[in-house]
Image (cartoon, one colour):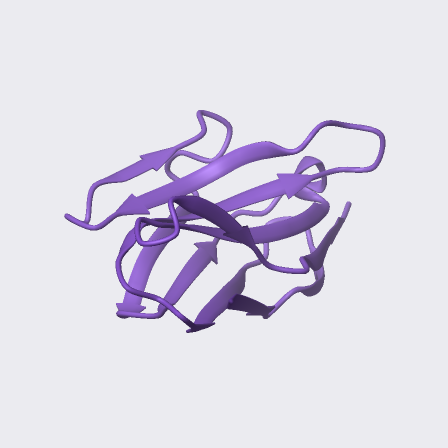
Length: 116
């Protein structure tokens, strides 16, 4: 089994910054990619950013230029969020695709609230 634990969420004013972190543990043979998703109240979960095993990165258009995903080590990924907007308010979830099991794993989520 694989466990993902997120940290770093909280309350911040518009224009501020937050850094989310996610650490994976358990039966991990090969991580194909890490990702961050978010889900605002009443909305579907959406992709925010991904980082592949070759360090390739992809971002949602809504966060390009403001958010940066990075791999701190083999089992930890972070999301640096700058110039936050009220519309960034959501529960942020970490994910990884593990090729050994051939499936995605998800964290429990961390709340990010941006006040105007």
